[in-house]
Length: 84
Image 1 (cartoon, one colour):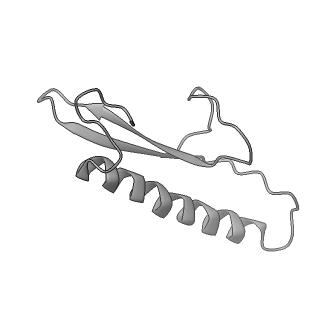
Image 2 (image 1 turned 135 degrees about the horizontal axis):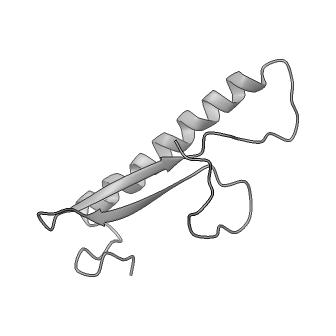
């Protein structure tokens, strides 16, 4: 997990994760998923920690979908390591 600092600037909402691609030493494309460790909620109720844990899980599943797209080459250009 990451604290959300240092990656590309996000727009809108409260971004809690992102997925990117790297090229390994054997020139293969590998997806990398980041999930923010510190999530800020609008309110802190009795179940805030459970809500944060559930949100992290949902974000992870969402970003794993992007990772799968990278592996399959869906909406992703493997030659330039970029989205079209």
